[in-house]
Length: 387
Image 1 (cartoon, rainbow, N blue to C red):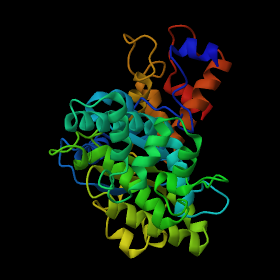
Image 2: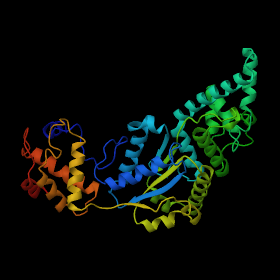
Image 3: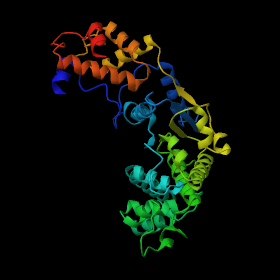
Image 4: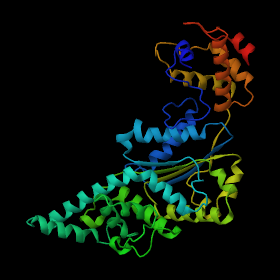
């Protein structure tokens, strides 16, 4: 493909049928993008601050997964300092052979390991600062004793007091602490070391643990100072794609996820965003989620619709522009605009995937047939021949 990219003067193939792990280009769908950005910005502590829950849906190939990947990039890279937020992105709800909310919880914690280690360091510094203010003349050994006692203050994470002790263990690089937080039960572990009476292996405890963690990160804790410790994140984001797969889950599995999702939303009323992706008819949402989950949605389901012909042309030009190796080239290069319009006309389902499939076919055939020469163009007549 290197020769093709050189001839087309592209940095990489813009017509991938499956979104990559990192998506940095958004094309077309300007109103949709603004709607999604409004949702992810709204829940930040420096904006409205209330939590959001929405479903993004459309037919296969319309770009739902691409949209979620782009939002992840927007939050964690493009606007990292502005958002200062955590993102958990699960590509599918099917994360274990036997499904439950606990299985999803374990996958979430697995994704959050680097963030959790940073939070453990942050909390340790906050506790030490608070103790130093309380005991300004204490010796180091006295400070250490007071810090250990402070970790056991149940008001640091009141909805799940063991969390602070688990974070202490993680700060001290104790493997069993991370295992316990991940919903495992290491052999021989003394649960009371971390204030636990049982492992985090039930839906109830998983919700309590994750909810406490999100609230600690986004709202801080008033237990460490009169005014509360400044939160380390402005918001927390949970992106879950392909939720239509839940239709194939056993009733008990789907019910567990519904209960867990409902209770987690209840546990995080501020600074949290739940954005789910679904392929298929919007009416399937009512078969996936129970009424008490549906009632917590902050928006009506958001649909990605197929494009009209001129919208498709604009979309493809913007895609190509995002992959230009020479930014001085026309946006549509190596396709003439009439060629892109012909592709849009000949593509029956004008969604991102099918348009990409058509462009990819034309580009490859033009190269193989020596129709695309350095500095040359793909014309509408080429599209007529190759599609």
